Length: 308
Image (cartoon, rainbow, N blue to C red; front, side, top):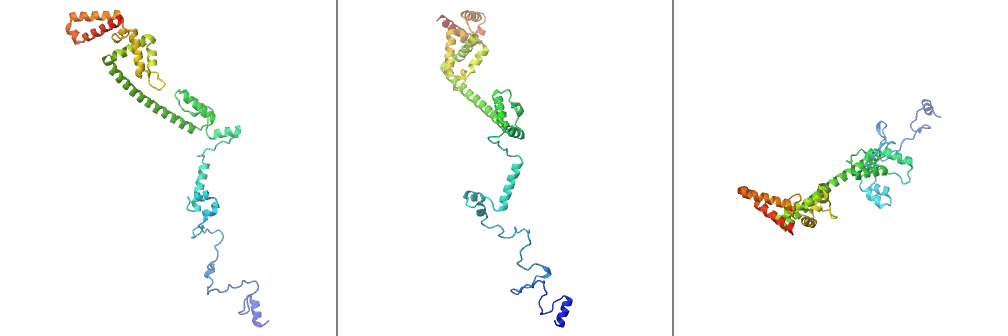
């Protein structure tokens, strides 16, 4: 070994032209005239360190990411078309997870759930043991009481039971209003038809009908009868044919009922005729002013009906 080489060995250095010492990395070959990066930086084109996100780089997600996820499933591919990127897909799934974990959705019981599973489910969803547990005032409505009993046995949640009762109450109110409007129209139509048919005797005939029923069955039962409904929903008191029949029966039983309210008799008609005649003789002005002349004619007609 020459002196120059010996000096190099002693200094642990490298002699120009002698090559790199054993174990030292070989210098990178010069390529396209590029020089090594200064200050220890990575040369251009070197891969990023592990763990560094690359999402901001253009082309990070391939254009066909939907096809890769959906595979051969055309329906899933169509569904993925709703999302602009995998990030949007992830956010959608995350929102769904939050809703599921929040208890917003009620898990259904399995078909073969055990008694313990049923009890746990009912407790978790606040289902009461009986109708009273819902705390809903049904105002002594037997129909709604039966419904809530069934709801508790069937596992209906309090919110669902409340919603159903609210719907029913609104429905019943709407039905009641509609029925009242129908009754009003039917009553008006019936009264107009009978007034046209009976003329000035309309009020007397109606009085005769009511008086006859009151004497026959009593006040309360009369109201019950007239407020009962026919199979098509009409009130009996609003049915023109029924009213005609009842008036005919009333007049046959008591002809003076149209003249003497409360059930006239021949004696009562005779007594009132005598009273009117006395007024005509003693106070003629009152006789004409009070229209007793017309009343006298009505009473005479009643007498004639009694005679027949």
